Image (cartoon, rainbow, N blue to C red; front, side, top):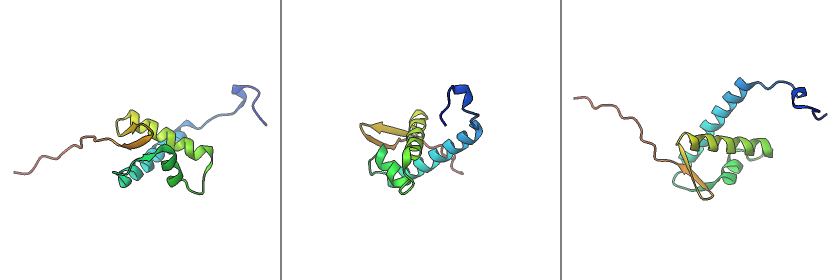
Amino acid sequence: MPCSRLTDCGSVDLPNCAVQDAEDQRVVLAFLLGKHPIQLTIPEVARALYVGVGGFESYDAVERAIRDLVGRGLLHCRGPFVQPSQVPCPTRPEAD
């Protein structure tokens, strides 16, 4: 039964959403790092990660993860393609 008002829709467990979003980001970033230098589109990434699961929720999760990773500078979108950015990695000082 659809909600008549937004306040009638019940509560959303935001901590669980944040945990799931972080996991989605980890999966997407690991996948794209493993595929680098192959360039993939967002739909291709969603299909590869959620084959058989399908549905709007899984596609939306991939889009959110990519959006957040782009915002953090870990991914770049160039046209329809998404790829890892060249983020400088911290280096350890060499032992003398």
